[in-house]
Amino acid sequence: MTRTIRVAVVICLSPALSYAENWTGALVDSKCYEYRERNVNPTDTLTYVDRDTREEIRDCSPNAKTKTFSIVLREGPSFRLNPPGNIQAAQLVRNTGKRSLFIVAVSGGLNKSTIKVDSISIAP
Image (cartoon, rainbow, N blue to C red; front, side, top):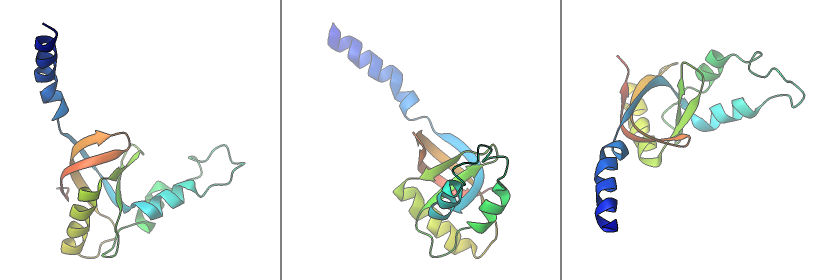
């Protein structure tokens, strides 16, 4: 009886495990962006008031040499891409050419603060 219940639970949860989410946001060089996010005065209590996220996104725009990527959502949070997602993003950047801003649509699953990328493309 216990095994039957386990099988039923696995079957019921299978669709939830394969559910893909979609995000749209700015593609950035993750090392640059994370450095800019950490680069704050330790005594400053209003770190987000003094920040210009748009400037950080423009300054950390990816180029052909970028190896690790993040997506910054309009609401503010950022998520790193998994290694296969980094490869897809690098190909996208190389194929698209030089830009000051890459707005992308990403489909995949979220694991903590990393997106397991199924697909990535320039947002319409």
